[in-house]
Image (cartoon, rainbow, N blue to C red):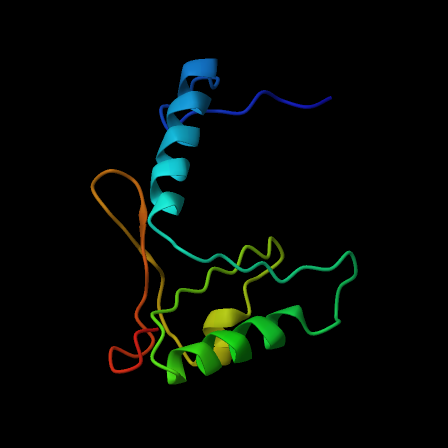
Length: 106
């Protein structure tokens, strides 16, 4: 049987919590002009390799690039880019992106 989702406080999520979270996501994404998604229904086909190479190539043309790995079984993007350590969290509970290269804008 599925257990109800929990808020940070440990109590069950309410509709108002989900609405607030959806609004935060919408606001964050609204500042990103172009969004690309690399996906497949099958594992092991090179999605991460394509995403990392695409991000690096775009950054080399002067574009400001961000890359988010949402792999539930273990993100490979940090490993592929040689990034170390955990992401930091801001006071309002959002992840702070880890810079790859200030020069390239990644």
